[in-house]
Image 1 (cartoon, one colour):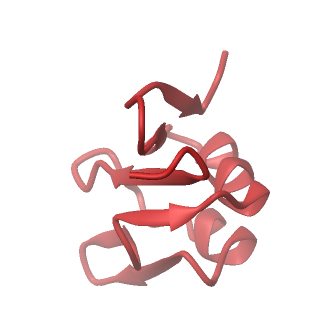
Image 2: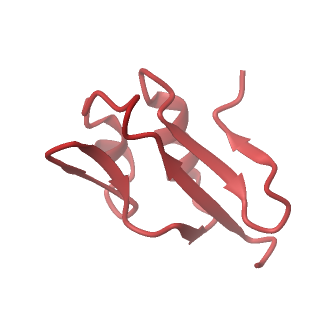
Length: 76
């Protein structure tokens, strides 16, 4: 895994399908009947992904460093 990549996780049990992530980062998320999901598990770094995670009203999206597994977003 590269230091320039992030791993995305969406907790489908927390997701309330607000659509914020799709509005902010449509290249990375889409809504389905049971909520949002990431279009790819690992993506190149993109600030839109961080914005989507930090804008999620229930913090269902987590962004991790693909190399170190450290949490990138959301931050407190």
